[in-house]
Amino acid sequence: MTQEQILKDLEALATNSGIAVRYEKGDFEGGFCVLKTERLIVVNKKLAPAKKASVLAQGLAEIGIEDRYLKPAIRDYIEEELARAVR
Image (cartoon, rainbow, N blue to C red; front, side):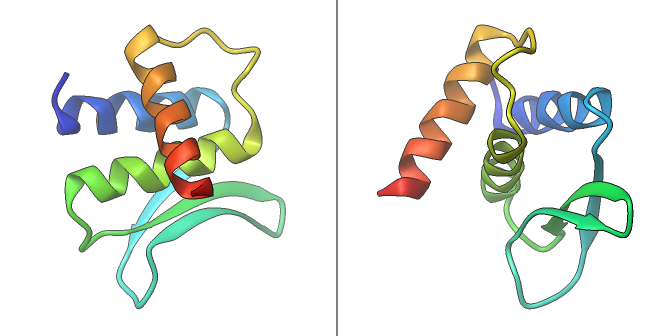
């Protein structure tokens, strides 16, 4: 599975979970946040696709995905990124 496909699948998962994904410019990587009543994951649009996917995966893990069906490759990717972030 390519990084672009993983990124698209993570974006779809976020959207299906009621979380908006916004790509913005700035001096940050990104992450999950709540703006007023909107839940969203903000991602720096200048990041490489692999880093964008990592930020999305960590944001999705933060909100909880245990009860959702995911492709095994996507679930593995999220778990690996979460473990990498903890190190």
